[in-house]
Image (cartoon, rainbow, N blue to C red; front, side, top):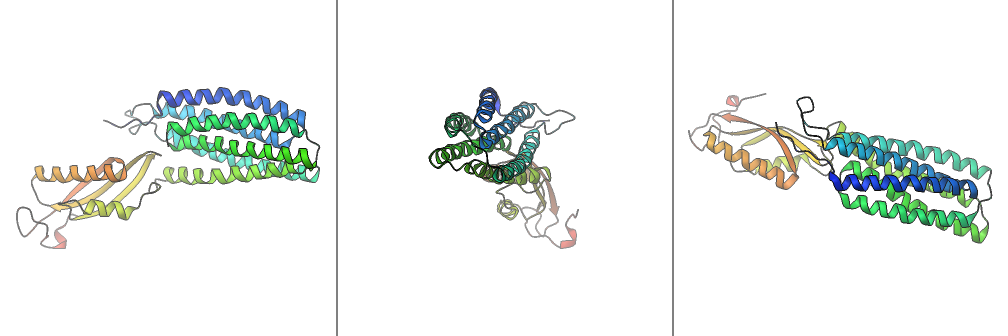
Amino acid sequence: MHVHAHGGGPRTIRVLQFSLCVTVVYIAVLVVAGLRAHSLALLSEAAHNLSDLLALILSLVAVRLQARPASATKTYGWQRAGVLAALVNAGSLVVFSLLIFYEAVERLLKPEAVQAGLMIWSAALGVVINGVISLLLYRTGGDVNIRSALLHEVGDTLSTAAVIVGGWIILKTGHWWVDPALSFGIGVLILWSSVGIVRETLNILLEGTPRGMKLEKIEAAMRSIDGVNDVHDLHVWSLGSESHALSAHVAIADIPTSVSDRILRDVKDRLLQDFHIHHTTIQFEHAQCEVAHGCVVAVSESQHHHH
């Protein structure tokens, strides 16, 4: 039994561990600064970073699990551990954004004075920290698990930048309502960023056609291989966000095994090169032909082998 492991590797693990340590320190800074400045925006950022911390922990656990080899009980390994982690991360973001909306409405109804200067400096520190973490995660790869954690960090970078602008407006105008208004905007950003991850992870778990793939294009590519007469019962799904599988019935002429092996190799090579599909299960079906060797025209439809 041979199944590719799709773990993130030592570099990804180091990046996640570094990000965890930095995020813990920044959360503490935000909580202290938010309480001292009476800023809901800063406290929202602290909560947002707490969800980032959870996202990073889940991603780290998932990366370690994905690196485990396949076994007799886990024949495809632990590739969907990252998908589950991404789904939990995105789901937590949805809940978190709803909580922000509630708190923002409460603060709009009862505005409180905030210390804009402290808001600005705390948010500026956050832009630097989250920006560095985002860059490191971006360079590790495109796994949906890592991308879900990356979305957390990018959302934080943008929202903390907005807090800087809001702090400056409060400092210049004294309009305290800007603070909860910023929180509401942060909530919208978080909610929007989580929807795509939820949809993609659910599609993987429901074994839908992988994102960006068209079944008709895959079938056409297989039919274009010399010796392939027909393709049916075609299924394509994802084992993990970066690992795809395919099963299909392929009709060929009643030809020697040496020739059918060539067809099988050509089909697998085309699927790997054009669609990055590594795991394939292809069943050949033969038809009786008018010419004994090299024939591509069946005598009658009833002589096909049906499933």
